[in-house]
Length: 341
Ligand SMILES: NC(=O)C1=CN([C@@H]2O[C@H](COP(=O)(O)OP(=O)(O)OC[C@H]3O[C@@H](n4cnc5c(N)ncnc54)[C@H](OP(=O)(O)O)[C@@H]3O)[C@@H](O)[C@H]2O)C=CC1
Ligand SMILES: O=C(CO)[C@H](O)[C@H](O)COP(=O)(O)O
Ligand SMILES: [Zn+2]
Image (cartoon, rainbow, N blue to C red; front, side, top):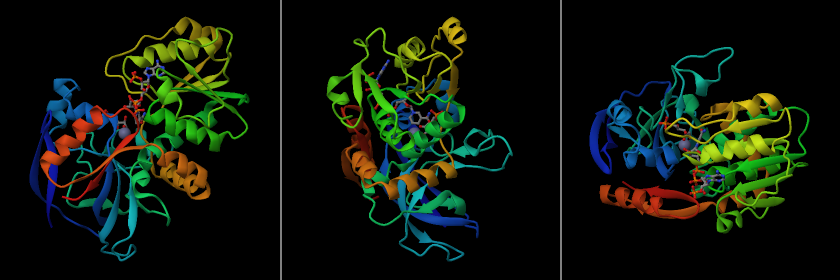
């Protein structure tokens, strides 16, 4: 099968490349329908990764968040037209201990392996899951990011001590909003506090029990467990505040990606017996748990629908460039394109 792949070839430059694809019985052919942009894609689009990384990973189709429509299933398990969520992590082996998203042999779409900006995507059979009825398509486009939040909180559940009194989230952007929404499902009896840099963004977290601007946190405030969802240079200050405000023996899940190493006050990490656990990406089990939560909780779906920011139909390369540029200046929410190439 000949496929048209929309690859980033250099910063802000896309090219359509024709690729011959082999479709085996283990594959499903999907037509992408709604695609959502992640920070990681923007770091490639703007060329802000180190040159050595860009040389290794480009040309590459961007986007690892999306929903598509089954076009062909050689085994006939999925009917043509079935709407499916797409799992970007693609394992090529298994391990009894290491989860699929941490296996060095796994490939991750839009990070050195073509993402979903293609006419058709050939997915391994276990990398698609049928969407339950009634899901908003634009919200469904970023189920991957929801599954990342699910993964982070699942790891928190596994690592934390018995104190679930107060959960603190640092970051008032997309990942912070998704994770805060999920905290209400994972820890319904806990007090949820969100820490951010913008009052106008914190106002969206109306379901949180309390929000604080990070330059106005009461000195005596204590939290039981924490999740960092900031990234970039902001991670350093967020981790410093977590170390300051978390109770002894608390656990902090670190999710924000920073290009350069950030400083951590290890003396106090040691003194307070804090567990720092990094989490990255997600696997099929996290997608399944995300779908279960979303199916069972209309209020969660509604809150996450409020995160849809920029939306537009894209049909040409210029539309794609304009869309990525638009996302860079978009203040709130996820940018979701209707993929119409
Ligand atoms: N681990 C994983 O698998 C994943 C990680 N990520 C990463 O998560 C990070 C966040 O992504 P996303 O939510 O989309 O980005 P956003 O830009 O939407 O959100 C980050 C928000 O955090 C705010 N912020 C910055 N510093 C602090 C601080 N010290 N305390 C509290 N808030 C702060 C930012 O404000 P301001 O804009 O003013 O700096 C911004 O509003 C990125 O690094 C992204 O790459 C995303 C997906 C998956
Ligand atoms: O966004 C993510 C998962 O949803 C990850 O942060 C992303 O995959 C990191 O990739 P890269 O190493 O290419 O920046
Ligand atoms: Zn991502």
